[in-house]
Length: 257
Image (cartoon, rainbow, N blue to C red; front, side, top):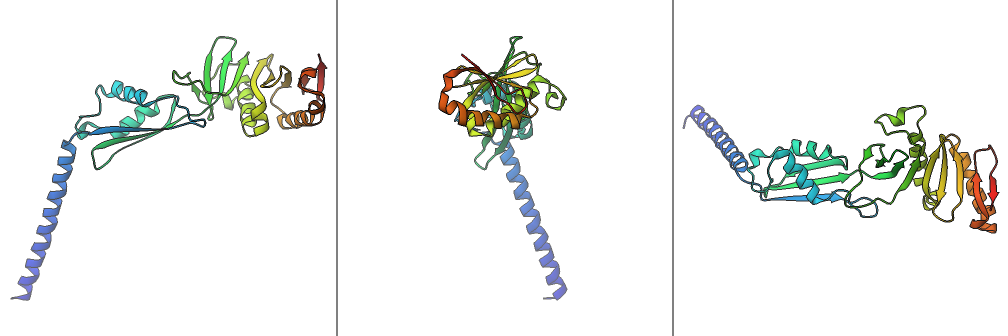
């Protein structure tokens, strides 16, 4: 056979094979798009302590309210993965959402919750959480997070409160962050009360009031308080003092009962 003719036939065969494969891929994609969602599998990452502020039913309700229909049984062509992620991430309890469709036509949804570190119950009757990024969260109908409670005369939450030079909520939030980094303080402090721009710590054990003042010099104040607990209260007992005052530099001033 003529070598040139042989080359031409091989080229035609190669192109024909490629065209056939392309047709098969397009056909498979069209069949996939024309098939239906079999199931919706939802995984919600639990917060420390194993609790959920949002559950499977909440996630399905968010999707149904946005799309107007259940995902199960819907044609895959109607499923907008990016839109589902945006809808879920608009919920105040959701930090991140990942959505994909696997080869078995299952919609898989993975949700990461926001983690509250502070609950605010101010003098104006507002009651909400603040998460570790400073975002305001509503209370959950499923679970009451066991976190430090901020009370008293607290400035309202605003998206930029952490950028303000002076802000009473910022002081409470920053002190909460410091407390949560240390197991000793974490096990000690239950509440931070704000009055006249100064903080009072309420311990979990005993009924002393610890006058902390403003956030500045917090490390030095906490160092003095730790020393006092180790060298003073350790010998004299928790119930001897009514107040412990850290507002004066280099001192721990106590009021006895």
